[in-house]
Image (tube, rainbow, N blue to C red; front, top):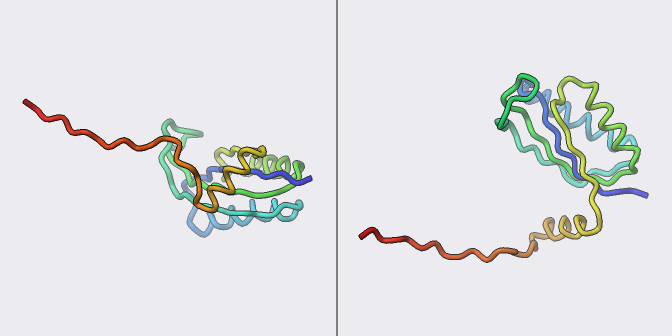
Length: 125
């Protein structure tokens, strides 16, 4: 049984652009070599942290979606823990409701929950 996952990870900000892509390709290979299939990889770029992590004030963010057996996640997370280039990671396993939302998101059909109210400008007297 394959599950659907979202993985967000942060790479060291001192990596050169080519080294960032090498790490992204490495994560992709961990997924594919363990029976997974990548749906989407989105590189968000260098972002500033609210509070420093591991002595760094920013990091290179990557967000991805993939389908894989549950053992694949263990392999990915173990490899990220022993590789110093990875600062943090978070893996989410999607349930049925999250999968439906993801499908709507991919189609651009996410319903608007809150109706935007027009802003009113108060006049000064």
